[in-house]
Amino acid sequence: MLPLILSLLSIVLPMAAQQQEACPVIKLEAERLPDLNIPRAGHALFYANGELTVAGGHTNGFVPTPTAEYFKDGEWHTIPMTYTHDFGLSAVLNSGKVLLAGGCEQPTGIGQTYTAELYDPQTHTFRGFANMCQKRVLASALELDSGQVVIAGNWYHQDGIEIFHEAQSGSGDFKGKNSFSYIKDVAAEHSTPYIFRLVDGDALIFGSNGIKGDTIHSTFADRLKGDTIHIPLFETWQPLRISTHNSAISLISDEAEGDYTYLLAVQDSTGQIAIAKVCGTDFTMLPTTCPIPMTCQGEPIEYGTNIIVDRQTHRAYLLGVSANIHVFPESTRLYTLCIDYDQTSTNGGVPLTLYFTDPLQAVPDCMPLLTPEGNLVIAGGLTEGSNFTPSNAVWLLRLGGEPEVASSKSYWIWILLGIVVLAAILWVIRWRKQKPTSATPEPIATQETAEEDVPHLMQHINSIMESQKLYKNSELKLSDLANAVGSNRRAVSDCINSQVGCSFNQYVNTFRTEHAKRIIRQYPDRKLSDIYVESGFANETSFFRTFKALTGMTPKEWKDKGI
Image (cartoon, rainbow, N blue to C red; front, side, top):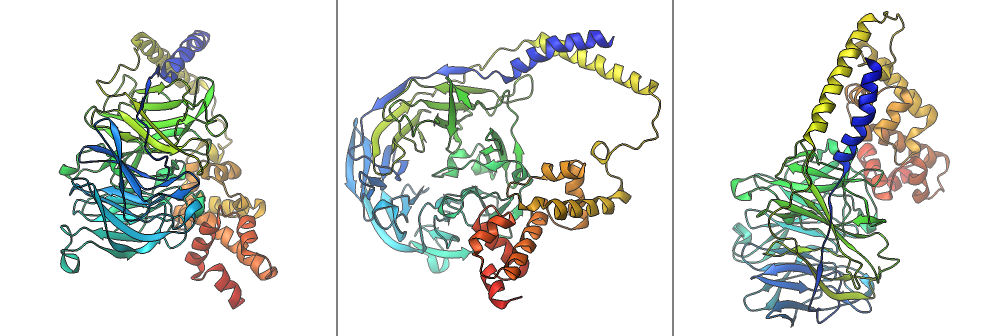
């Protein structure tokens, strides 16, 4: 019986795997619309009063431009702004006006500003009114149901959370005037963080972009109200790094019913992209019919945008470009991954379709926008990987309409596969009953750790961490530690939680902090920038934040005290 089963499996499994992994790939025509009057990047792109509008950013020579443009009657109309907002934040408000604030203070991306203004699309005018509580560049903003706008993120230090109160939404001291109020510091400093709404006027703030472009790997998220929370999914997957952020476009639920569910692109340590579903503070993986394609037309794909949701058609889009855009900017393809998030295939996954264009000239690398017709539009951005030569090109990707059938299914394959698997299970059960019982206990890796073995496992974990100095690997994962001690991820994680009372990352960071303290004691003249690398911290921000959390002092303060 076994040879027959193996023979059938050798035929069916490759066919089934091929069926599961095949992602439909469809060619898409990109339409060139009239160019912007001014080449620009680092700008805001939005619809206001039904008009496609760009505002701020910088133009040729990396010089900030105090102008905006709106598209009407087949052409772009340029209007003046009060300030420049190069890499500033923007938010289209429920009132119909648009908030723009912050950005670089000088040409070539230097400095940051407090300045803020409101755009009135009815009159096509901008009006400055107040300063933010702190200077910001590459920040994010999201309007809450109350009409207040949460603001967080900064390229430089001094990140924190503040609230914008529009005159008509403010109350108390803020009633009748446009103003800002500082709310709280953040546990982790970000640039362009994700901001997701929660119930009761709360918000979740997280991301993989640290200050000054650092990549941070955090398993925690800040909240507008309350303490930080742990996100178990972030142990393995991290939010996709993006240069601009607008989480409102990723909402798939009806906020009018108090339901806030988002789609989030995440990435693992190998670079593979996947889709997560975020409902409140619950982060889960969205099953798909096939893995997200990372290559097409013989070239790698570089994804780098929010997931853009079209709630009318229940489709969502993730935009990518040829990974060689900075090498061959004159011939770059656009890729659009379509996610039919409200459909379920026979294998329980959500259908995916990948669209691609022919190689295009002047393809900008920037955030797209969903049009009222359900298409995607891209205006301006970088074309050569240089902020000194932004683009004035505007492209339209016609994706609107009824969802296409991703692929047909061969039901007989799955039926046959089920029969074969069932037969294999029955054969294994019979074989195990006939197999003599061995007196040799199974290793920890193949059985659940008994309760009385947990302290012994903890001693083994501590010993391995000290002897092999695993903590010095800044990319150490829970699976790495489990392999080193001959156990499994679940057993090691549960053991650390029960015996030490903390998460895996917190446990490892205690070793890194103690190692840093030893270096500081023995070599007081060593630079702190060298110490954090040698101790296993991924970046300086993580080093300073963790050190202070565990000792109550910054590394410099601890060093100066000579403890």
